[in-house]
Amino acid sequence: MILTVPLALQGLLLASVAACDAFMLGRVDQNSMASVSLASQIQFLQNNFVSAAVAVEAILGAQYWGKGDKDTICDVFFLTLRLSGLTSLFFFLLCEFSPTFLMKIFASDAQLIAIGTEYLRIAGWSYLLTGVSQCYLALFKITDHPKTAAGISMAAVLLNIVLNALLIFGLMGMPEMGVRGAALATLIARAVEFVLSLSFSLRKGYLWPSLTAFFRKNRQLRKDFYRCAIPLIGAYLFWGVGYTSYSAFMGHLGPDAAAANSVSAVIRDLVCCLCSGAASAAGIIIGNELGAGNEQRAKLYGRRLVIIAFLIGFFSTTLMMLLVPVSLRFVKLTDAASHYLSGMMLIIAFYMIGRAVNAVIINGIFASGGDTLYDLYSLGICMWGIAIPLAALGTFVFHWPVYVIYAMTCLDEVGKIPWTLWHYRKYKWVRNLTH
Image (cartoon, rainbow, N blue to C red; front, side, top):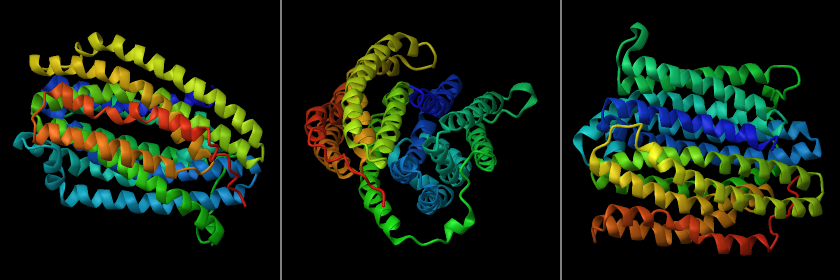
């Protein structure tokens, strides 16, 4: 709980930015909300690459922290920073020089494309800052400062929400900027998060990676890093592109389906924060034990965490059902979009069981011991082999109803549960990765 609560809170705060964007822009007009939601899929893809790099930092860092090797943790930090920084630069360049091309991937409506292009040109600058600050926040988590990471995220998110209100609606004498205001608020908040991350890392009691570690060569560590990173990047890429394709399918079904999907995605991400927080906590706890050589205790904790994962899944399902009537009151949707949203929320409610179980076991328990290939295999079969082809055929060939296509996009998480539990009992994840 000490780890899960601040980590879940941090995720909740980050997801609340997207929620505020959606609900505030939803008060302006439906197209503004839908276009920004689609444009944000670019940042979602960038975050997946960054998250893959940061996940390796958490996997190796947690084990070396359990071993008490701070110098190697600094080496892991700079390996992560290089990978994350280059990825963020690539996405920044795409947003600045090809924003219209990016938007055409996710929407066919000219107005949605034009609004999203305007958003990306400003928000793209924030990607550069995120690539660095996330590396520092991950370092805080694995070195017993999860509350600091949550506090920094809280400050940035609260600033983002306040600036959203001021700049979108032109409150307190600020210019009324609409979509451009949402993008500018995101950029300013990320800049503050970046500065706070650097400032806290310099404080006494925190691990400060000195620049000498940046130039230090550790071939064995680099080998271990990319052995974990390559399948994780593949898995995050598989999941990120696949997950983004779901929004693209909804975008091609028309503005009403796109708007309903935008709202449902925001609510789903808010509820999923508890799953993500528990998964991160599981990875740190078991990674510490494996790095310290306590393999039997790691197995014991693993069994308990599987039970916790199912409990979180059932709780999330109940919460999603309760949120169905509430969600319809906060945004201005057409009657058709509201009808779509109600059905999508009920489908997500059952999806949440699979999401919780797979997040804790795959991204937490398996990853803690470097068992990262399983995620790649399972995504290749369940998402790319089943869910995406069915959703694509339903959208472009058979023209199935929106509800049916949306249900196809949720098949992968639920279908993986039996396979995931079978792989868990093989205990391939019980490995000490330190040298």
